[in-house]
Length: 343
Image (cartoon, rainbow, N blue to C red; front, top):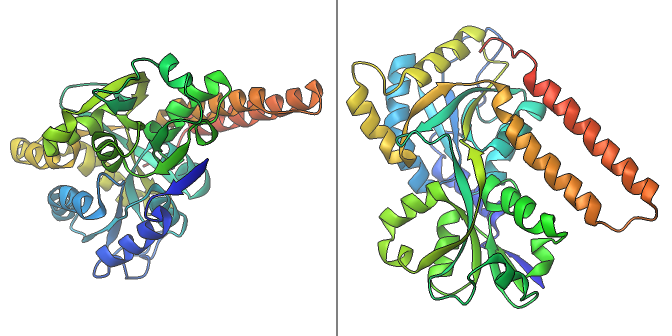
């Protein structure tokens, strides 16, 4: 069994960030802690390719820049790891991120949640799915699990909630399996490329999510017609926006107010049209770090299920590991539920 990281995703993400933003993100990190801020850098969660993501966000960010009277630079990368590294290196001031990325940003990178996206259809979240070809002989998870070591699999990065964490937790760890060893081959790429891989018969099964599939159906209707959903997860909360806590509180408040008011004022119709470019978004609602508790629970459940399926020298060793997982989860939830610094 081999695990292939398509096009060296980590290196590609970092190179993509540099190439796309040479004119934007090369400047030094702005001064902080009450000093005058000359510009902000916004990090963009990969949706499709970096260029596509950057183009989708640019109209809204231009409006936000005018409202704040500050230039907003953009950092768009091709991988979750690329964005995670940019936040860890303090090259990003605020960012649109998945729940898993947000957990690291809040616990390690001095950031806090200020908003959560809302969608046009009013859905409270989205769903992870497993895709197969429409004419695939796989019609249930049982069909898939009857073929260990015989199928080709495409998944998202380990920091992707719908592309890795949720299916790994709800499908594979539930059965004491690891997707990276169950399949004959495993490739790692973004949702769009994984869906194309299924449609083009390059893989047999791939992870995706219902929100990205809607976008995929619009862009690739012929390929979408060749796909079928084999499995759907429980509800996953929407992605969030995080901001650095060492920015002046007055600026964080202004960013939060501008972001959560976008699409709701006198220019609402025009702004809503720009939000549609991003991902069928119709705005942002105020949120805090407590919005990340469901994502912490996903990690917790995956860690416990993996502990149960691991080989242990004794039951006492396994119980010690489970207690450690429990304590770490309880500590994290307390941290997320604690009052945040004023946004």
